[in-house]
Length: 187
Image (cartoon, rainbow, N blue to C red; front, side, top):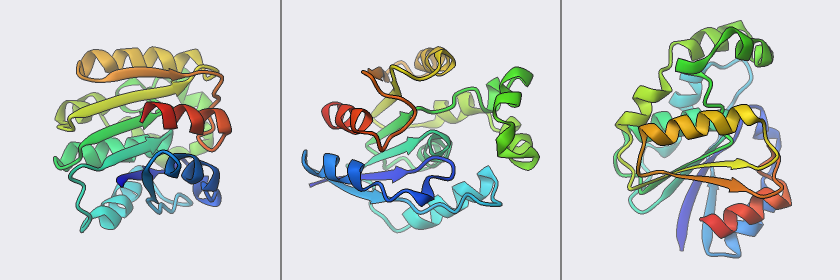
C-alpha cells in the first residue's frame, strides 16, 4: 500500500479528514495526517512540529502532501529531506514569502502580525530549488482564486519537472467530494 502524509491547512486540525481518507484509501493509499497545532504558532513552529512527527518515518517511496498553509510546511520539509518520493502542494498560497505584497498581506491579515512577519522572510523560491523529490505536483481547484493559479504557473517555471494540475469544480476545501475525488484520480 502506498503511503501519503498530509499536512493540513491553517486551522484545519478541527477537521477529521475522514471523507478524504476514505476516498484515497479506496484507490490504495494509506493516509497519515501530520498533526499540527496552528493556534498561537508561527511558520517555524509548524515546521518544527512536522519535522518531529516525520523524524523517524521512512519516507522513501512516500508522498508528502501539503494543503494551503500546510503546503509551506510540506515544502520546507521536502527541501531538507531528500528521501521524499513525491511532493504535492495543494492550493498552496504561493504569494507568501517572496511574493507577499501589501495587497496580498491585507487579504491574509487574519493570520496575525507575527505570522505575516515570519512569512515575509521565507523565500519559497529558494525552498523549491532545494527540493529533490522525483515528482512535484502543484494542484489547485478550478474554482479557486486566479491569484493561486498565477503563482502556481510561476512556481512551475522554477521546478520544470513539476506538473500543474487543476481539479475540476473544486474550491479551497480538500475535504470536499470534488477535491478528494480529483486527488484520487491524480495521485
